[in-house]
Amino acid sequence: MTARQIRAARGSTLRCKGWRQEAILRLLENNIENGERPEELIIYSATAKAARNWGCFDRIVSALRDLEEDETLVMQSGKPIGIFRTHRLAPRVIMANANLVGKWATADHFRELEEKGLIMVPGYTAAAWQYIGTQGILQGTYETFAAAARASFGGTLAGHWVLTGGLGGMGGAQPLAVTMNGGTVLAVEVDEQRIRRRIATGYCQRISFDLEEALTLCLEAKAAGQALSVGLVGNTAQVLPEIASRGLLPDIVTDQTSAHDTLYGYIPEGLSPAEAVSLRRADPETYKARALDSIARHMRALLTFQRRGAVAFEYGNNIRAMAKLRGVEDAFEVEGFIPKYIRPMFCEGRGPFRWIAVSGETNDIAAIDEVVLREFSGNRQVTDWIRTAHKHVVFQGLPARICWLAHGERGHLAGLVNDLVRRGVLAGPVAFTRDHLDCGGVARPYRETENLLDGSDAVADWPILNALLNASSMADLVAVHSGGAGSAGYYVSAGVTVVADGTEDSAMRLERTLTSDTGLGILRYADAGYEAARRTAKEKGIREISSV
Ligand code: NAD
Image (cartoon, rainbow, N blue to C red; front, side, top):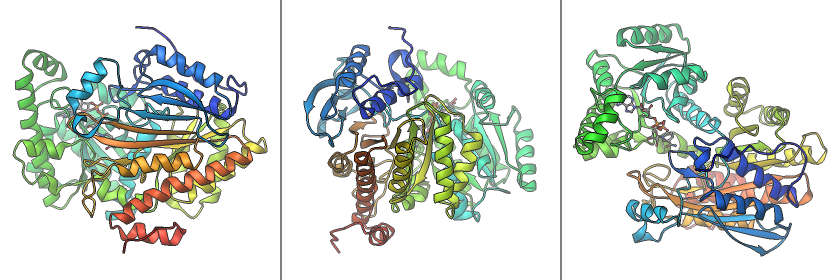
């Protein structure tokens, strides 16, 4: 394996023939700088990559350096294919990653092609060079708990406690996301080292090895209205039923153990992490059977809490489907977090918008934070996040900020930032992008598009149209992905990046792209029958050709 260290270029020196190409190149480098296993070009989620292999990476870099301001680079599953003369206002990069034809879109066929080196796992932001480190997960989790607080607890989690499991790569954001919302959280994690890592990075406050002690700490903090996070070393399949049997009731219960994977993810009750590794190797079938038994017990405890009055939701880890496989027929009585909390935001075009200071200057992000606080001063959801992020978020790689802005707000902010770049107030251009988990970005029947009113959960036309429309709206980079070949099922997603380089052209490209992107997302939900989306379309002047 090639041992290479990639770090995103900073500063004002151009290596490419324009800032749009240079910004895209820096975002690619930034992805790898922030990656979990950069030596294999793996960015996150165990296998999601930024380029097919190092040969492809080198060819992408030289293609971006050669690319003229009226040319477009075409990428296929992490491999650069060709450069075409298009137009000054056309995208500089378009990409399609891991899209398979219907009947062949299976985990087995996907792996076969991957082994032959013909495609790669794209994730969402990994292959589209839009990953900005764990800030994205932190804010998504923060927004979910904030939405739960607004829906059930008058807008704050102060005086309430959350019971959850799993403090891994993504789940590790839960303790901080809860305390940022003022609440108390007890997170059950079987691997002591994972809890220690969260404490070392400031994501969790306390570790406990004793259920009694952990419960006392949490219930006292709840009674005092104090924010507190406790990681309890234990197994969710054992601890949750135990808490239920004591008649204790958390205010919110959810989970982020890797229940979607019964061999490498979920650890069966009664096994330490080391014993899990041994059994997995020695007898994978027994391992899987024991994991499913534990998941079923865990799920029954979640259902018990819900029936007794706790707010319960699945956090995208597929625990309901796995438990149902093991006979928990009513598992889907617990709702997914997207229909419960996030979809109403999608109906306003609100989602994980983000921007990256291409110059590498942290002051640029601080200056944009100020603009956001001023322009959206009446919007607590936005201002609370910016203030708390300013305090808690440590930048990784190029300085960046994520902020869930709605339709219209994104284009407005980007226009102001473009002006700051033009006037030289910022040290360099700023790239605007978003997660694919967004209103217009994805069709994924077990998560983002679960249980739509009209049953169109699996229709993938929408993200494809999103990509086509964003390319027509002059975005700088447009991507269409498929993936998720595991038990969580296939998805199709679209990604977009637009660079504010201070020019008149970029003002137009930002306004058109950011309006089209969320505008079509809102029409997707209006089309599926969501009144809130129809209302937004009407209020914001989105021209829906209504079927009703
Ligand atoms: P991870 O594998 O890094 O972490 C999972 C953690 O769970 C590990 O620390 C493991 O030790 C712990 N664990 C496993 N079995 C356990 C058990 N029985 N009891 C207690 N702890 C146990 O995974 P991750 O990246 O943190 O993601 C967690 C899950 O949440 C995944 O299924 C992921 O897909 C899902 N997720 C979904 C979304 C979304 O829908 N947007 C967002 C975040 C996470």
